[in-house]
Image (cartoon, rainbow, N blue to C red):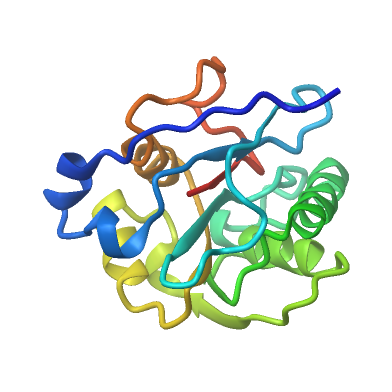
Length: 193
């Protein structure tokens, strides 16, 4: 059936306090998608193409990672099978709705780079500029906003980690979606604003 539709006003005061203006950086709309098969939620309120003069942010937490090699550092953990499937599904979802980044700001961790590689495998029409950003590894929302300000394209995807990415996602909509998983921002969760 059709996906629920709703529109939320942007939280201008919360973002303004961090030096980011909604007027110039983010449209006043929200979409959320979670690729994990057990959850499969979708909120769609964003038009497929970014309107001229607007900017769009696709905020994604890395897909599910593997824990089976205790010798690997946290930074070097790869995706597990479920994570690879979820990231491929995310890429297909983004392509089907025209949410195609022109620039990707990706943490330097193995799991975020693999998440992007799986998303990029979808039939995307745009081949974005990829920037591996070590500063996004376990970054705070303020650090993420600082890195976001360096983006040079209108549609930007940021791939990062909890808890920072969940905290940033919570700042963006005026009222977060009613889904109980939004606050914890599970693996492969994606917010489009």
